[in-house]
Length: 118
Length: 112
Image 1 (cartoon, chains in turn red, yellow):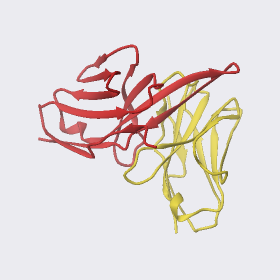
Image 2 (cartoon, chains in turn yellow, brown; image 1 turned 180 degrees about the vertical axis):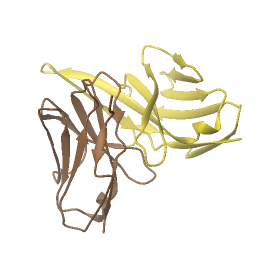
Image 3 (tube, chains in turn red, yellow; image 1 turned 30 degrees about the vertical axis):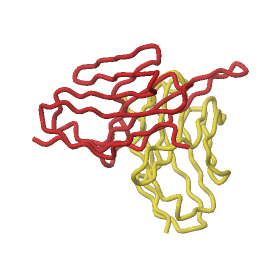
Image 4 (tube, chains in turn green, brown; image 1 turned 180 degrees about the horizontal axis):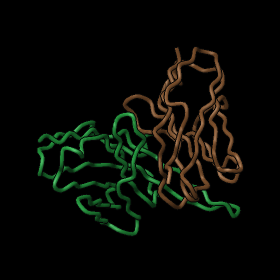
């Protein structure tokens, strides 16, 4: 049961243009969403996140949009740079409390390979 | 400030063997999570440790076990290795479950 889906395995963009990476989820209990970037031979690096109470979060060239009714989020990179070429993972989290203990884990999508051409 | 470190970088084992992977969390972090990333897939949650106890577990068999030490470092053990266990194993640390997880570079395990 793939609760987080990135339906585009790859995306190719020209330098300076906008890159839009998409992610869909099925579990309405998710309350926190994150984007990670991964270069070969490295672990995923946190990029940007958004709480379910917001619909937009911006950090420099990176903006994440959340549409809760559609269970969809997207990452916009403007302007795209060749150094942005990497695998981008969407992840969702749900934190809950039971018996005085907090629980939470990340559920990842399959990833999208972004290539930015000079 | 050192980030999350993992050892070894690469490992080759044969079917039926046992393996231990190690992780040191980012300074100040008390929660360690382990993930398995198969080729072409996103990381899949194995389990999470907090205060030296397994707090929650993903859909992985009992062959996968772990441990967390008083200094918050952690080990992942896999017994009776199968070919399908070949993957990149990622360790992530965080300050409890409410904050972003920081990942190590991973251990590439190949089972022959």
